[in-house]
Image (cartoon, rainbow, N blue to C red; front, side, top):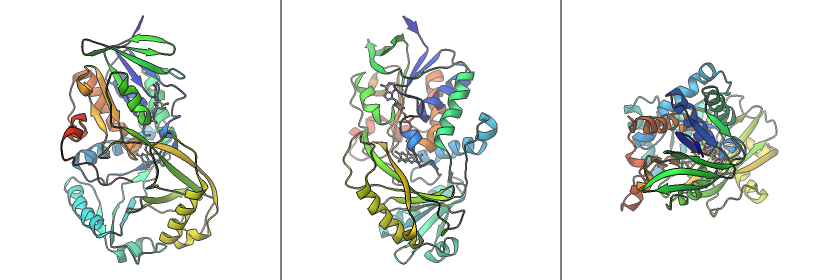
Length: 381
Ligand SMILES: Cc1cc2nc3c(=O)[nH]c(=O)nc-3n(C[C@H](O)[C@H](O)[C@H](O)COP(=O)(O)OP(=O)(O)OC[C@H]3O[C@@H](n4cnc5c(N)ncnc54)[C@H](O)[C@@H]3O)c2cc1C
């Protein structure tokens, strides 16, 4: 039977980042299996947003480390990722959100994030094209931005391959053999690989992989839709990523067009990735409300992708998950897995090679779901 030191299940940005970091740490024999093609899952369908603005310290730290990778990706990975550091502007329309924004900014600033609170007037000066009568205030961090997720994942994959990782497309993990409480092998459609370490980075399919070792991971797939306008000149060429927080509506430039998305609060869990015109009408209304010029935009295309969502919107990251030795997970990232992937891949690689990480993973333990209160992440878009 074939053997490997580590088998990674999932060829999205989490899997390719983990593969790269493992190889960088000298792990010799790493196999990544992807059931379709690399980056065919949520990563390639993501809006590419990158931000430091989170509500809990552990997420801010992971994002701070990840941002350093994005800022130097082009040189370090010899890959252009179209990184635009135009900032994230969050808008609060609800008193409870505005109160939380203020607490979040205090924490973020203590940690060195160059974020600031904005009054409606400050926001109007920065973005005069926004309707602000219902806005109580906002937050802006100029180091936030967005990049092309496909290029980032492929940049990790290319370097991982160069360092010796075996990346296998159209290779589906069907089962994981567990014996005496620890993982023994991955059974794939193309054969079995004996291994002491299996990494579940299967995104929206994470619960299926969890079941292979007898665990019910609370990670549920939800469709999220994105729409892109035809080239649109009635907004400035450079705008931040703008987040209307209460309805979870966001928009940014995508070249000459505008890319936008929103959370459909009525969306049931599913693997559906179609885009639907009825929902586009709701998104277009929200867009025209927040930036009235967008009322004149024509829509060119749209798509659906999957968030992998946990009950408290924080991921599950760690080793020996559910007491199964050698079973590693980084799953359940909602809408922020792309931006956190550089650091999370490094964290997993350290856990696998040394058993340790300097990051605080306590908010990401599987066991937290048994506790009565979960802190959770509040800045989820
Ligand atoms: C519309 C949308 C917008 C988003 N916007 C943002 C954003 O602005 N910023 C941000 O940070 N994040 C965003 N996200 C979230 C982000 O895309 C995800 O958190 C991230 O891509 C997760 O990466 P992943 O590698 O874990 O998952 P994926 O990219 O989904 O990769 C998982 C892979 O595992 C494979 N797989 C599954 N089961 C198996 C198996 N049994 N065997 C082999 N392979 C298997 C799948 O085929 C898939 O390719 C967005 C997501 C969506 C849908």
